[in-house]
Figure 1 (tube, rainbow, N blue to C red):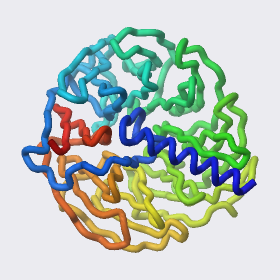
Figure 2: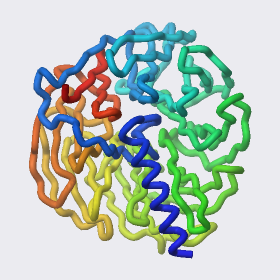
Figure 3: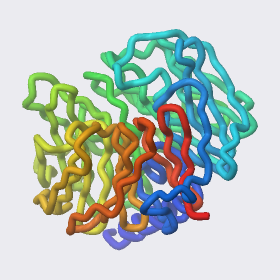
Figure 4: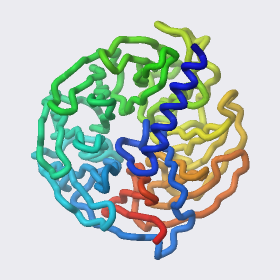
Length: 416
């Protein structure tokens, strides 16, 4: 049985690797782990490495996704009157089309936007969540910009505004709709938008995590979801609950999950926090079934961990960059023991999740400074690149190019 599990894990990793070099079809790329198999991305950005720079309409923190030579992202007009799905040619940077929907100005966190939901793509269709200021609509489009279907998911309530992003599982699209007072994981048919299954979760404060897939010992896959309620596994076929660990908080308020979980070396790593500075990170051993006890907690940390930026893992180590201090940290994956920490730059918070490219980590702070350092046990700053534009969205990597969404422009960085 263990041999079968290892073969399933290898198959998933190989599938992820084969996609990574060509497409980046969801938030944080293949399976949401922020890892690219590309090996030709510049470390130091010279003028010749800026292959193109395209001005984007409006404003938004929706991260770019790349599929079949097209880049998709969401934006909003400054006055909030419209939302739009924008398609950009990945080779030239030319805006191919923009499809607008009505919206209104609404109260959000000062560091959020009205268009923070990242699309997902499957090679034929692109799936986008739009928030009009009150309700959310889940939509499916073809690559020419034709609206195929739309589903009214009702009112969305969060003191911070929107930020939920879908993922594709075969012919299904999965959406973790976690808001203040209501939480559900929903599977839709990608072709029609019809609901296939829905699973309710305990609701606390709105969370913004996107699930990922994990191979199980039976040779299938489990859908891993994290929120304030805890970390759970579901059967992506029908939503059957398979595994659940409940988060137990010692802070004054339950902490929210913004940066999602990752899987590495047989453990799930999940982070939570809040704007007041409370933090809680756990490393969970993946075994058992049903309700899991705290015996599955291999290690945990309650300070010095990220809230918004997601984690990265490589080899024997887990890496992260803290939000407010811009401190990069390396720990042993098995034990949580700190190997090193280093503050790169003295100004600027971090909202973009870092990416791993060819054994190197690219982390971008809010001022548009891209720090590059090795994903290993020795700390070293390889490069510090200035985009000269604020960045809050997470980057994408595809076909030997790095795509970064700034406040006003989409940058394409690569080697000629």
